[in-house]
Length: 179
Image 1: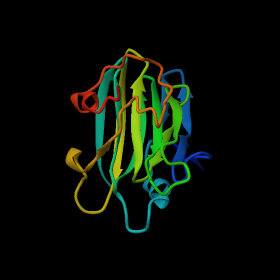
Image 2: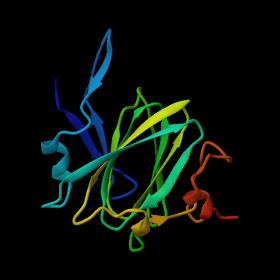
Image 3: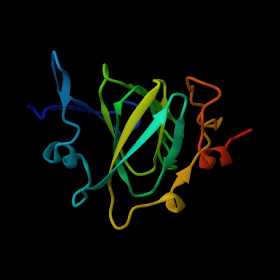
Image 4: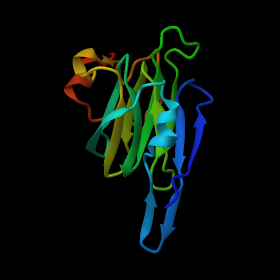
């Protein structure tokens, strides 16, 4: 099995990397590698490495985010189902502050994104069901909810063109809705 990845930096948001794994296909289906330390961790600042993984399972029309923090690098993808993935530049000193980039991730377009600190992460599920994978790298302790930022999914300053006007939201995201 090959550990080849095609790695490119976003043309829109500096520091966001798009990682396309090589995919083996045969009559059984597909197989691909989501992480290979020597290839992926070279994109991180020196001395930083991935510490833990999370998975979220969501049904159709669930919208998660826009969330982020000041220290975590996130390697994210959908391992099952289809999502619309959004990276939002929340770095106040960036020329692309509050701009976003959209990616559709599914079995036909299997990619991973590496999101640096201060990049908002959001995803919307378009399939009946999805499984989303996060891999985190950070110094010190994990930045849990109390250290994270949240932008409203419908923030007019960001103006994301979501595939819906009526997503299923968490209590955290409902609290931040812009009227």
